[in-house]
Image (cartoon, rainbow, N blue to C red; front, side):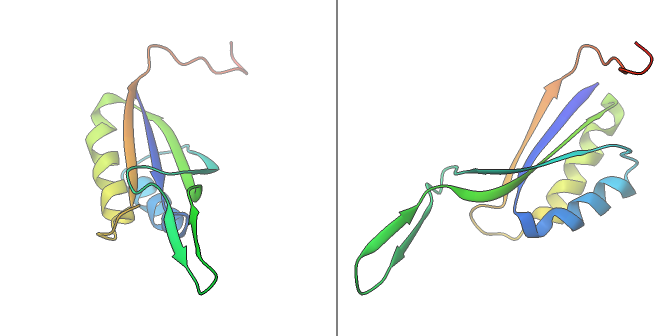
Length: 105
């Protein structure tokens, strides 16, 4: 099994959810997060001066899938979240050794 963790633009969440659903993903976890990657934030310049906003709002989407769904999930996220601009996000793939359902132990 693999955990797919994607950091995306918040406005792309609905499209990513639909894309994952279309490839057969049944469960996801969504978290609102803040941070920055290589873009190092946004610089806003006004008459008074300039300000750097280095904590950009993003959305983290996580799911655990069978190995066979790894690449279809990655492709679905890229297709749904890509705008072609800096800050589109990042996808991490993490191996999962074991998953235990709390209700069933």
